[in-house]
Length: 222
Image: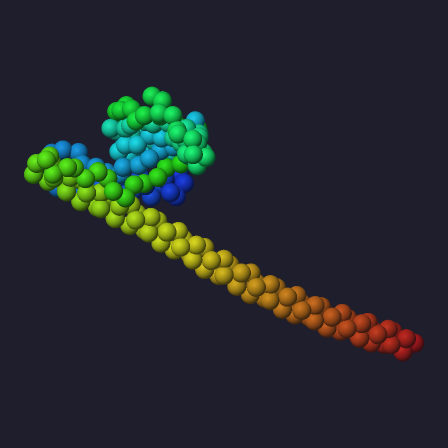
């Protein structure tokens, strides 16, 4: 017989995000949307101080992240230095090219470089009025998809929390039943030991009385 291999269960936040992504993909397939709408727009900050912003495509159990339509900018230290200069009244120098936003496209970020992941509430910035009705319609569709994505993410975390609570309650109930069984078993064993001890004592007393009677009868015989 072949051994059954149980699938590895990842951390709960990663599992909840994966479920939300699967629900979004299933909804898109049911609606038969021709273009890929915004799923979840996130900001991923790395340990080196780079911030990647884009659409979350996949996230595995080890928190390795795959982004699409991603941009990159340098966030840490540079903004702090500029803020300190402005607080002292010194005019801040112009931002260097390293701090400007750059378009990268598809990006794979390893968990070893991951520092923080932020889910954005508003997906797309508001377009100017000169962009036309088609652009405004696309913006409205993306904002609607953003609201659906946020609702899907919240429902996924709520369902995961309810599953965890249900499992904890089941474990507690199981532990209570096991404690009761052990308690009843201990009471039964103590009672049986007491009964066995009493029976053994009675038999020993009977044997003593019988031996005394036998000794008396032997002494009376000439």
